[in-house]
Length: 132
Image 1 (spheres, helix red, strand yellow):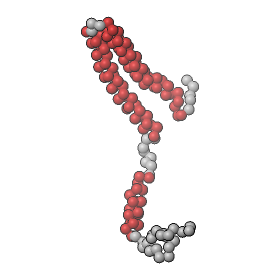
Image 2 (cartoon, helix red, strand yellow):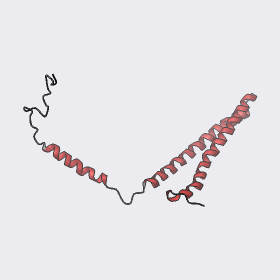
Image 3 (tube, rainbow, N blue to C red):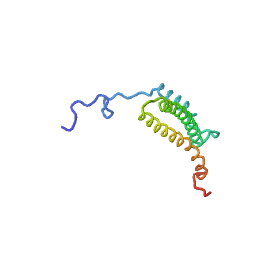
Image 4 (tube, one colour):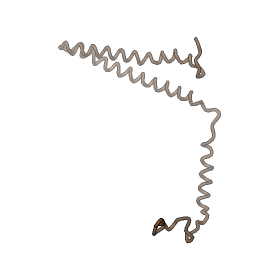
């Protein structure tokens, strides 16, 4: 009872299985696909390395983040200042003052990250630590 009572019709070990004929369209398409994908496998000699490209992308992203954070800090700081100046409640004035401090501290931290990286990066030039 090891054998299946109804084996599949296209099983390769059956003596009555039809033989596949060579398919010229399949071979032509495979050749065309191989030839058209060959240029994608070549590495251009003039292209920048992955690290220089990643560095350029990171600088661009950091510049965009600084621009957005500066605009957001100005808008939220102006709202906090307006609430501090035109509020009659002492609690609102205290909360807006604390929010203004948080906004300024966060903006200073975001802007100092670029300065810190500019000072630290030369120590790791070439992927190795170089003493100052």
